[in-house]
Length: 197
Image 1 (cartoon, rainbow, N blue to C red):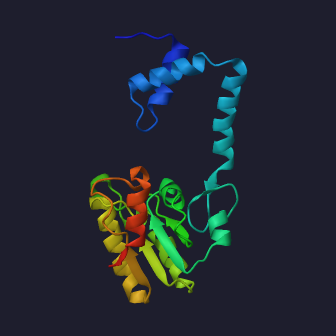
Image 2 (cartoon, rainbow, N blue to C red):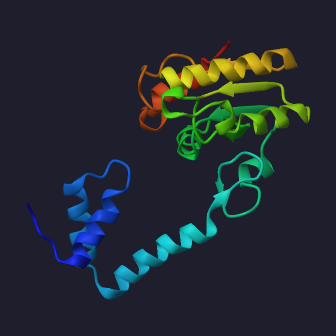
Image 3 (tube, one colour):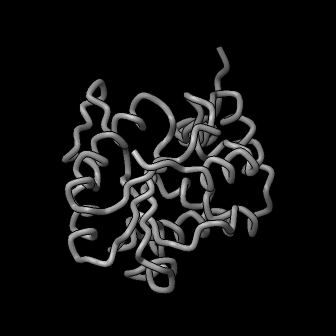
């Protein structure tokens, strides 16, 4: 078993709390920080603190923003709302330059095994946005896995009686994969070939 002096061990422990970062990767990150110059380390730490202080959720869609309302909500056509699980999915879809509507970030999906129900994610807020009027289509772009499909079906059942077109991304995306890691061509095809559910 490796033994680290307290400051390095603490740094490794903090890095290993990040998603997808195992113990070996956390060690590499810690060693990289130790080998930074004082000014590089301060800039790194300042970037973390700055992001934590300034980044918030858009009051309309739930995406990351520095303002009360994100730029997408302020400037885009609100007749189409694309519903995604997390803010990183917005970034993946925006890279395509195909979509001109707005987003709604659920901040999770329905997952009874994890104790996450419909009231634990931002479904009420979505229904409130639709209730304000002017929405013509809701695109359900949750991941094509069991939880994403269950969430999409649940939302579709709530939206259909409201007279709003409800579509789901086409199945160009492999089942069990995550939108964030899907290649651009597959993601673009899935988005353009979405179907009403």
